[in-house]
Image (cartoon, rainbow, N blue to C red; front, side, top):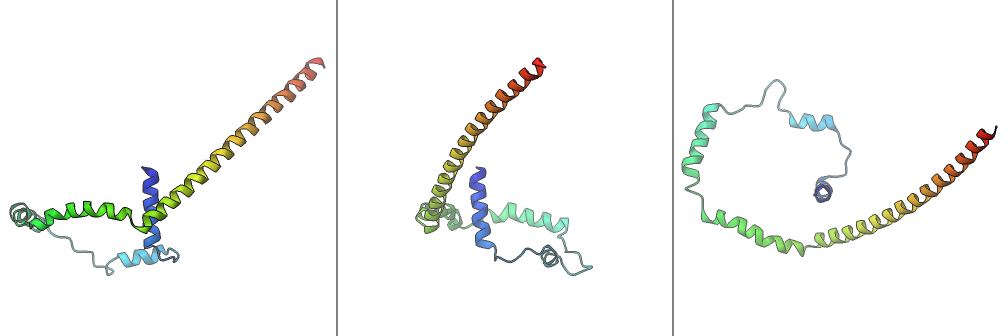
Length: 135
């Protein structure tokens, strides 16, 4: 799950990032309203009246086409699999699997090397102890 999320996040970033350096001060200044003027928030009465309107009338007036929209979205999902981006993702996935296999082979090789070095260390340490005991 985490890998899939990170792949999605990377793809989203590649699509939405324009390549410029991140400037936090500039970003924050865009998000603020005019200095000294706090953003207006709706009052409780306005929230309650809109919630009541949604409960009573909005659900009854929903068009049937809106109910069919999720079904259309589900039907479009298999078509997305035929998209070239999906092929690139599959190619990237196979490349990542190959790299993972190479990394695992390298880890196994290094473990064997470490085991050999530990045996050699223990051998010479034993010899040194024997010499110390004789002296």
